[in-house]
Length: 129
Length: 296
Image 1 (spheres, chains in turn brown, red):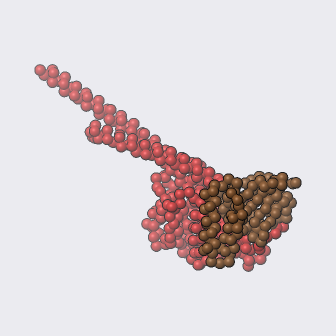
Image 2: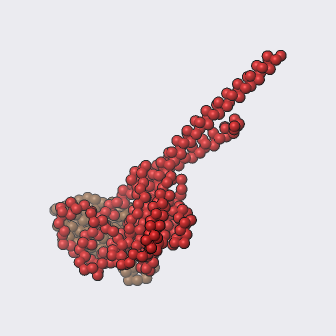
Image 3: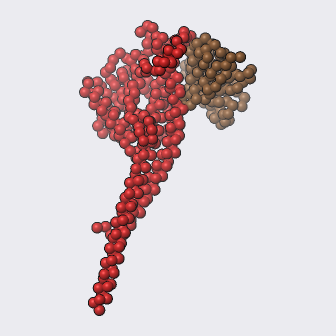
């Protein structure tokens, strides 16, 4: 399978910059699988899990608190508002993130905030540390 | 002429000062390394974002759909200057050089008949500017609680600014901070935030290499542009804050290095003085003894 460059950048640092075969992004209108040669597009992302696949197995998983993906045929960049590497995150930080999402859901006043809080909660609960 | 005891005390006190400045220099050096790292690691996000923004802006066809943050409110009457400085002093000319740049611009704009408002981030800038401009000072934001600067801190300030912009409190917003060039050189810089200035000259070679691809947008182009412009303000503010913190530590390191050296020089001078006086006193005592013995 052809590979492309995938970059995940948060305001504080670059989390990943490596080759991948298949990346799954949490698009605002549904999940989005990106392969080499994808049609160029700019997609808003909801809070969720970004997965990288290499040789059929998962090579990296990240939780992001929403952001934007710039997809091009041979490179894809995700600008995340906040990102956690699930594979080496401490339990403490993860629990904090979870309670933050729960708090946001309880406080959500409009539909948008509710949607975003619900998706982050769903994503975090789907993770098995 | 100070007595021997005075000199001794003086030397001891300068030595104590030297110890303090030396310690401050080392602390600044350690903090500088961390601050420098965060500056460099925050750059990719800003540059990528600018690239996407540039693409989007070039794609805009109808003038009406241009968001206010990009086109401005159409007026150029009220200017808001956001002056970002440090919370603490003892860092050479760092705070005063930013304040000086801001002051020049305030006076220039006022001369041109504009209304100017000031917003200070950090205590020192506020302290310097409030003397002259207390009537146009809008607000101040403390950085004291922010130990480790995070994106959310910049976001808070950005939301504050956006609320003011939507409330029509200003037309143009400019931030002032010190750009970190190297440990010994920091440059006070101003950057227009609203309406957004997206650099026109961002690597034309790269554009030539990859001819503009037709792009899909999800959701609509306008919504993404809106989102990005909002983000962009927070990102630029974060950049300012990070550059500032690195500059502050750099300036403090240089200032404290100078102070340490000056203290050393002073100790040398005082010690020579002290020794000379001590010898003079010994000579005097000897003369007294000898002349006393001769008189017998």
